[in-house]
Length: 156
Image 1 (cartoon, rainbow, N blue to C red):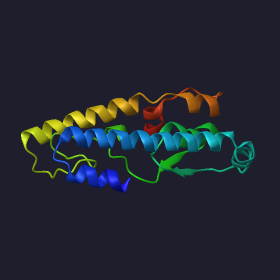
Image 2: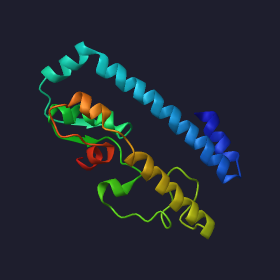
Image 3: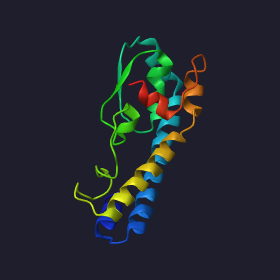
Image 4: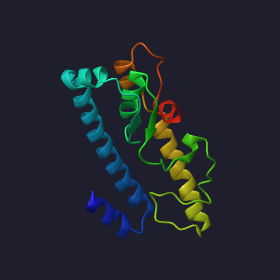
């Protein structure tokens, strides 16, 4: 991860930054997905979680369809331990052409090209998150309505 961050910081090419960031995000999501599968496949641990009778959960916003899916399957309220960079999920307007993305190195004094880049970058992130499937929720909460990643995040 550190090497990728240094490559992004040193690169003057926006395409290279997007390529490196996309590769890192894919690697992180693959790791989180395998972590989620291992968690769900651990019958002893999942039985313990279900039997404890928890009343509230605090979860991380990464891999929402899995980590948010666990408290959803238990029917308990939950909150995020961190705030999403995508404020639209929480219905808070944030115009990416004026407010720089946390994942890019721009300030609030962006040029037109930087504003356009930020806008396009945010749109791509929205597409990726909205594309999250309901696989984990359907598996964990087969008796509850099927929700995707965005719907799970909006229940916070």
